[in-house]
Amino acid sequence: MSKIYKFPAGVTTGKFSPPQHDFSAEDLRDMMGEVARLLLGTPNRALSRGSEIRYGTRGSLSVDVKKGVWRDHERNEGGGVLDLIERETGRRGDDRFAWLRENGFDGSGKSNNSKPDDRSKRRVRGDRHPTLGEPVDPYPYVDADGKLIFEVARFEPQRFPPASA
Image (cartoon, rainbow, N blue to C red):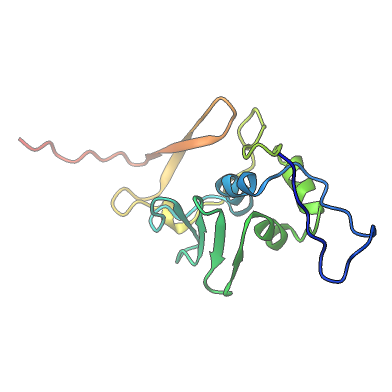
C-alpha cells in the first residue's frame, strides 16, 4: 500500500520530506489504550464505561479507545495518540514516533514488549471499592505479549457477606 503525502502549505520543493515512520493512522488509533496506560497510569475504574476510559479523581480526562482520541475536559484540549505523547512527554514531531519505538510499539498497533510493564502504577481514588475498601494486592493477568488484560485485587480485611438461604 503506497502512502500519498501532501506538502504543507507554502512548501513546494524538496526541502520537505515525508515522515520517517511505519505507523498508519489505524495503528495509532489502535494503540491509544495501551499508550494512555503507559503515560497516565491506572484509570479511574468507577467512572470508566465501555470503550471510554476515564482518568483522574473526577474522570476529567477521557480516552476513547475505539476512536483513538482523548479529551481533557478541565483544560479543554484533546487529540490523538501523538498529541497525548506530546502533552505528557514534551516530545514533538518525529521524536514522538521515537518514543513509541522506545516503548515497544512497532507500527503494528500493538506493543512488542514481551514482558509486562514493571513500572509502578499510580493508584487513583477510583480503585477504592465502595464496600470493600482499599485493595491490598493486585494480581495482573497479561497476554502472551505482556499486555495487561485485567487485574484482580485482594482486599483486607476479607469480609464475606452472609449467605442467603
